[in-house]
Amino acid sequence: MCGSPAGIRTPVAGSKARRKSLYSPNEGFIGLISEEAMKMPQQTFPAIGHVFHSSGKQDYYRRLLQVQNPNQYYVITEEDINRLFLEFEAKGVTHSHKRSVEYIITMFLKEATKENHGRYIFTMKDLKEYLTLIRQSYSPSFYRKNITYLKKLFRIAGIDLAESLKAPTELNVDLTIVTVDDIKSLIQLVDSLHISNRFEDWKRDQFITAMLLMAVSGMRVSELERIPLKEIDIENRRIRLNTHQTKTRQARVVFFTSEVQELLEDYIRTHRPNVNLPLATIAQLQRPFRKKSPLRNQKLRPKHMRKFFAQEWDRRNGNATIKKMLMGHSIRYDINALHYSHHTVDELQDAYDKVFCDLRFLG
Figure (cartoon, rainbow, N blue to C red):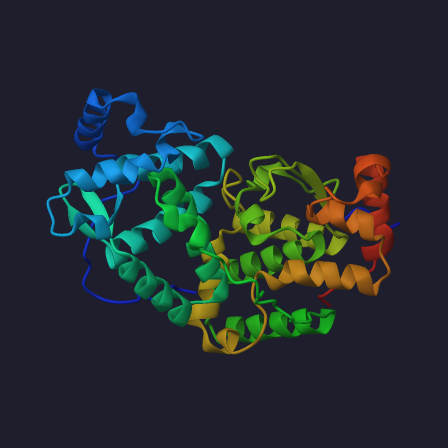
């Protein structure tokens, strides 16, 4: 055993429907709709699931529209949008996840709908044109997210188009292979930028320490951002991730090598960072790849550090079940891991050290 140790493009100009924030409901309008709904007979909203998921809502909303041929329109209200976010709040999703949903819903309202007395209305043609635009202008994963969140919103609004929306099945799999030499080359590139005064001392140290911590621990970039420095157990080379810090909402423990332990100690001793803040944020890690062309033109990005962990673990013949536990992968369908393969933290760290004990990138 070892010793101790991109931005998203704006699709089109000229918005049709604008809103300040999806977190700021129009209380007056919601009250008006609620009051009108109270006056209507019970059969107006058939009891199918939640009352606000019922198909009768659209017929009612269309009768309130002051447009020609109202039956061609689908209607979304502020209350529908707020109920969508209520569902996400109840699930306890992260703030960044909620902001992602807000961005997608806002883009849809802006580009595909027009406002009519506090309601957002669109036709099937509007929806088709919008989805075509998204498919042609953005990545497959962003298109799938649009389909997923619009379906949720449509179901809440009682729009029958929800069942007609199908996300593409093809996966845009990142086939990048990451080796120790690849990461060493990245570090050398950062060092060359540092020597030419294009990387400040503390930024260079922060960047390399954070990248290597993810590479040897298997943490996601989003997880690193949620961990204050004071919660990193440098002495024992451990980080305990609670349910609010992981993507899967499952607590786990990760480990790091003695080399990264030394980097963390040196970084804290030299630069005196605020230990109540994370080692690095997503923005701090991504910015150099946008601002510095030598970094922008090579293949590695922060997300590839976790990919390296998985690939290097396999190259060193590490136990597959333990890898799942360390990376926070779902073990729902792994009967062995779910029911039989249980380990103490010390046992996990022993297994980790047997695999990564001699892993080094510097010197």
